[in-house]
Length: 66
Image (cartoon, one colour):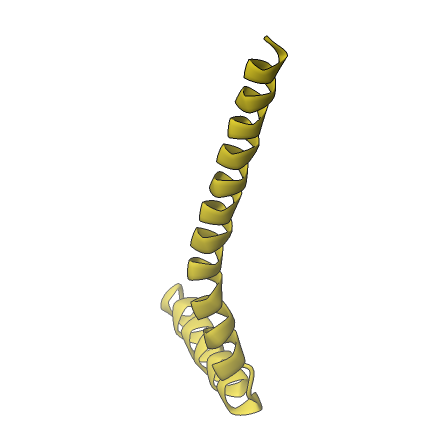
C-alpha cells in the first residue's frame, strides 16, 4: 500500500515539474521579445523621439479644445 502512495506522489511531482517547465517556457517566450524592444528603445535617441511625439500629441489635443 505504501508503494502505491509513493508512486502517486512521484507522479504528482513529475507533473508539477513539467507544468513549471511549460510555464517558464511560455513566460520566457513572451518576455524575451519585450526585453529585446526595451534594449532597442533604451537609446537616448528613441527616448527623446518618443517624448517629442508625446509632446506634439499632447499639444495638438490640448489646442483642439480651444
